[in-house]
Length: 291
Image 1 (cartoon, rainbow, N blue to C red):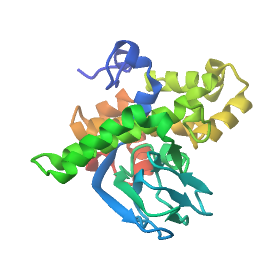
Image 2: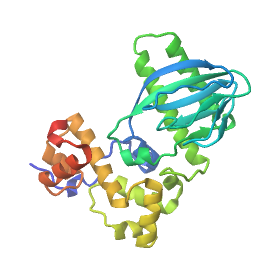
Image 3: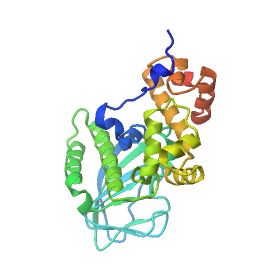
């Protein structure tokens, strides 16, 4: 028998129940998937440029010396020994140069799943800089285990490295939020009003939210809510909800949890045809091509 939307109100919810259900950062990061594919340690001579692949995201950890990021997309930044920099969209037009002597830099390259909440990725700050004093308690241990896997390649090393890069990205984003930075959608997590609206969209993806209803949850006027949400999230509220629901559907299709029409119902679409149209508009292919 086909299930009704009312019976699926709490689905999908891939996270654990209890306190973690209210962890909005985990809800979002669960849908921003990435694959780490390379780690190496490089020595950069004084005044020389650190070359990075333009089309990939990177984490840089300065093990010795310092880097200077010159004018460009990232702006002037000094990265000292023990600091970490996350470049979600690569260095762009900026130049990263060793300053004050040679520098040794651990370079972690990774790629985001191109279909995982693309608006959220594009709205991340171009450069997230975590100073050693802000990240040493977790960074040293992660880097130690990652470099061990890099030097002593055992079976499963590639997966281990990818997972550690995943953890580095999550921990960097969490630290960035805790430091109170408000640029990009991460600011929405520290904006109590926007966070309330995000939370209800994540917890009840099947509900046909209206802009007025979401603004009421946030305790804001309709226009102020729409403007603030778009500023922080990189997407208008209802577009964000649509991408979130379709991202959940994509995961279920890949897991082959149910038939296409049933999955469309689970994420709030009234018919398989409406679900298929929305899915194709976002991902460029039919949901049947995903399964």
